Structures are given as C-alpha cells and as structure tokens.
Length: 427
Image (cartoon, rainbow, N blue to C red):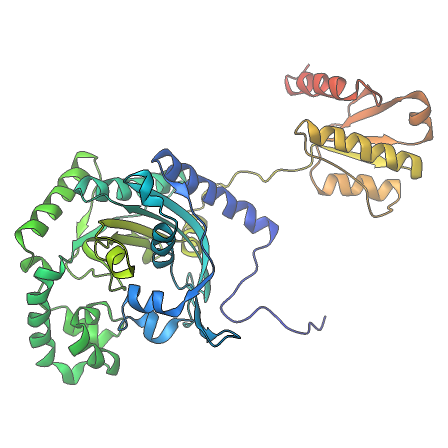
C-alpha cells in the first residue's frame, strides 16, 4: 500500500493492543497520586515561548536546541511544551489555585515535544506523567513524592528501579560552588566540547550533565556540590535522607546528579532502571520557579516519569498486563428485523455495564460467528425469524458450546444475569 505520508520521525502510533497496556499503567499512577491527595490538571499543549525560556533557563539543552518554537499568525512566538512543570506553575498562578490553601497538589498525564535524535525510550513526541506540589518547604514533602513514585513502580511489578539522590543547594551556596566549578573546568577547557565551553561562563553546573564521554571524564574529578552546601541546605538534605530511611527506602547518593533544567534547587533525584540502564524519570525541588514566573516566593517540588521509558521497563521485566475488556456477548442476526432486535438487546446490555456487540458489516451467519470467536466473546446469541416469532433464543457459551434458552423480550436482562451468574459458578 502506498500511503501519502507516514508518521513523522520521532513519533509513534499506539495501537489498541498497546493502549490497553498504557491505560493500565496510567491508571496505576493516577491511583497512587490520588491516594496521596493530588488532583488532575490539564494545561495547553503550547505556551508563549518566554515561559519556557524564563522557567527552564536559557543555557539548558532543551531551550537552546530542542524546543519546537514557531510564530503564530499574529507574529507571537509560541512553543510546544517540552516539559510539564512550567505550564503547571503558570496555570496554578493564573487560576489562583493557591487560594484554597497549601499545599497545592497536582498531577498530569500529557504529551510533550522535544526535537532530539530519536532512540529507545526517547521520542520527539513523548508522554509524561508528572506531579507538582506547591507551598511545602519541609523535607517530608520531598520524601512523600519519592515514596509515591516508588510505590507506583512496585504496584506495577517493577522491582529493579533504584533511587539516586543529591542536593544541589540554594542560589546562595551555589554561587561559591559555581566559582569552584568555573576554576576547575577553565583549567581543562581544551578537553570540553563546544557546548560545554559555552556553558563555562553562563552555568558551569550544566557541564556535569553533559553526555559527551570526554566531558564526563573531566567532570568525574570536579568539585562536589555537597561540599559547598550552606547549613540550611545541609540540614534539609539530611532530614530528607532520614525520612527516606524511616520509610525503608534505599537510595544511592550521587554528587554528580544535577538534572537537566535550571530551575532545580536543593533535593534532586532520579529513578534508574537497572535492566534498561537509564532513568525512568526524576525530579526535585524548584523553590524559586514560582516567583520567577510571577508569583510570590513559594516552595515547590515535583517529578516527571517518561511513559515511553516506563513501558519499555514493564516489557523488559515481563510484567503481566491485565487482559483488555472484550465483548461478553455477541449477537448474530439474520435479516433486517433481527438486526434491529440485535441492536436493541446490545443497547440493553450496555446500559447494565455488560460489554456486548453485534454485526454491523452485513456478514453471513458463519462469518458473524467466526468474528465472535475472534473478538473473544464469552457468549453468542443467534437471532432469526424463528427466534423473533418465539420470543426466545439460545445463549451459547463459546468455550464449550453449551446452550441455555433465554427470553429476548422484557425479561432478557434478568435472565441473562441469572444464567451468567450460574455459569460462572459452574452450575
């Protein structure tokens, strides 16, 4: 078949067999979020470009290289969201969600867009499940978010997901650290990639996040942020670790973990998958972002999970997904009058929450029954002139061919419910 076009590079279709698995994973994450008091928020797929430039930092790779930015018909610069946090902060402020009191707890499940080289678990259109919490400054909030994500992983059957933890301090203690980093990397700048050379004066911490092997080798010997934390940041980080330990959560301290966006402060964390070799997501605090976007100073934190990577991990771990919902009853019809009756019975089953279907393709009886088996129907019912005249039909259990007579009149639902219950009990 010659299609006029195919899906754009870096995007992927999710077929019904795949979406059934995705929805199960998403429902698990939503359930965990709501257990912890989070409510769903939905924000636009695009925002004014300055929101991301101000919120994420001009020297991040996302802003410099990966944003889908264009002018609309009025000449305004807009950008497809590359991540969820900045838009959620904007929406929280614009809609006054803080008026109901703190903490404000929000979750979202959204596609995001970044122009980068597609690879396993990294697409140009990718899906993110994230949570954001506003107004909570205590270390216990950091621990709650981390525990929530790890609990969701366990509920889905992922037991190889770890926790890497670091603190990158506040703007006050980072100032001295930046000077130390600048001195260290300046003495070794001949080995840095061009991108990291541009970061040297603007934000040397970004060099720690570079994926170039040469830059990574140089960064391995760089000063550690934990040696420059102020007393308040040290105390906060120590208490986060104490909370996690009390919850029985194991973690690895990683002084090189800085995350890829400039808005982070203090606690940062990632959830590495041991089997896949990369992180399924991560997050941390961003206590200055709300003020930077236009609100009052407000402590905040959150995390994002890459759904594409999460699904790869579930497949790698051979997690057993629940069976998708199938038609419980298929009603085959012969003739126009029987077709109308089949539609009526199917609709009656739907009103009672029973998945049911009938033929809408004009198939013959043999083809209809073949289709009933193909979709995995538990029961089938054949309607023709004789059945319509008698007001009764044979309900057939597809697994073994046993049949039971059933009314197709006003007592249809009651009789079907009774027969189904009896057969479930093996009566």
